[in-house]
Amino acid sequence: MIAEHVYRVLLVSFRPAEYLQAAPPGWKEQFGTSVHSIAVQLCLISNGWWRYEHCRHERFAYFMEIGDTDEAEVLKTVERMRRDTKHGTAEVIRVAAFKPVEKGLAKGLEAADFAAWHWNKYYMDKFRTEKAMEPRKDFEAFANIAQGKVDYIFATGELLKYFFSLVPQSVLEGQTT
Image 1 (cartoon, rainbow, N blue to C red):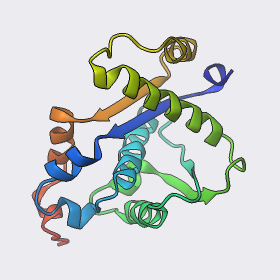
Image 2: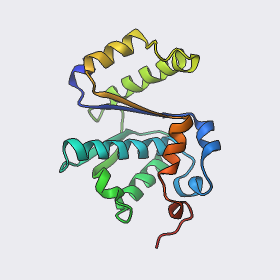
Image 3: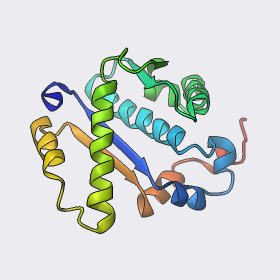
């Protein structure tokens, strides 16, 4: 039922230990150590570029289920991104609102839980056991019904290094002028 009604599903994941080990000097100081916060940043930027290509003049409202241990850091990071006009981040992401809400109060959170559970299960059962080309039948069915609306970013290895390389050294050094 979810797959028939989604417009886009974006799954973002990291390996926390790899992220913390591979982060270049200055990265953790500028962007923190919360993998959740980094995943949210990547989601906002990815959705922002998708929005630019498909509905350029629209803005998005985002909801996050309350209670995450990194909630305060995520909110601080998103607010910083919303104010960042110097690097163009605010214009790319065009966030109308980013609000933490109780479970069940925002449409989409159950769908997000569903997609996250399936991605985690796929990772644990298949991806980490080098059977990535053998998706779980239920996840495969979801993706097939969604007909190309499911994207994922698994930021590991070379993709993680590339992600880190996208930030100018001046930002990592805290230079604002």
